[in-house]
Image 1 (tube, rainbow, N blue to C red):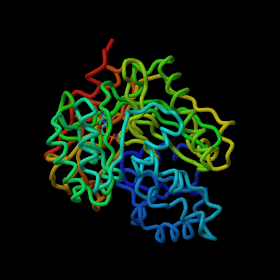
Image 2: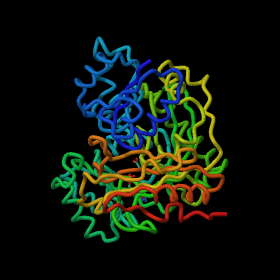
Image 3: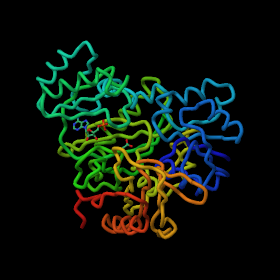
Image 4: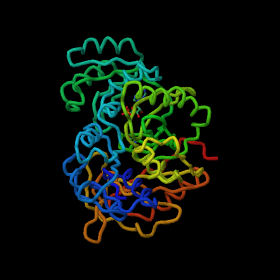
Length: 427
Ligand code: AMP
Ligand code: GLY
């Protein structure tokens, strides 16, 4: 059968790479894709938000399943668009409907959902623009630092952590003044939780769920986790402190109450759930929900799944996920992101990428993030350009392989962090 993947990053290349290994798939189409996905399937120059264009592609290419990578079309209601269309209704969409996607699309909705289902998260209150004095009073009741979040989607930039209450108040005013557009029409202020973060993923058909490998990503541009936030500069899986007892707590306190909560609230959730967690002295708390896989986490999670990904997605679509098994590769997988110089600030695009053919094709895989084909050349087309994943029996082995391969690739003014995994004991 033919399948359509929506998105254009490393996450989508990882999906396409894995789906291409399934015997049940004839052809993969990608909207809009990148040079990496174009080397496996067919890229269609249709943007992720162009639901009508996507509909036409589904008809023209006889698509029988749609996998949605990024959050924007999900929060925008792509699944509902399919359900409300006579032609598309029967085509399964992997990704929640608009209501389910509010877990990511509205921080206030997510916090209230967690409160209703007793899911551990930071204490919080939400405020609207006419409640600045109340927001200030609430901050006074908290210890610094102050965590201020724009309610809506802000491309990963909508969270501010400030030590000074007066500066925090000024930031609140600028958010209400439009710093994050309508995403900042509401804010959530919450207690700061000290701890180590990790990302836990499940896939669900709305009835049951399967746990996928966990990961840790490295969000800051600079080594030692310093400097500006990015989309993610690298990731590792497994996460060593996420041992069985810890994952049991995550399952009992967070995953099961979330799946049951969705069911109780009549939200038929079919897709991935990404739990952004923080480990506070051995206890997991939810920092955020995402209604999709992470990027670059997918570039280490998918390479550790041995089972046929399409078979799992079919389980989601048909509502028999319970019968499926997720087999996991016990080796470590690590990925290092190669970015354009200047990112996450201004950067240049269109740089020719060299050396891709020299990388080890057995023990590593290069996922394209921001690339495009330009005649016979592959050129950069975004801030995050390539994600170099490798496997190893230890974290060290795996990182060594990722770095060995990334060194073979070059483009003008490229940059990558040399210290992915630095915070783990390497023995
Ligand atoms: P988010 O966009 O919600 O993932 O937040 C961005 C980052 O802010 C997270 O990855 C955390 O590092 C940090 N963060 C968010 N909320 C909290 C919190 N309540 N306590 C500590 N750190 C937080
Ligand atoms: N790497 C974090 C995210 O995908 O949101």
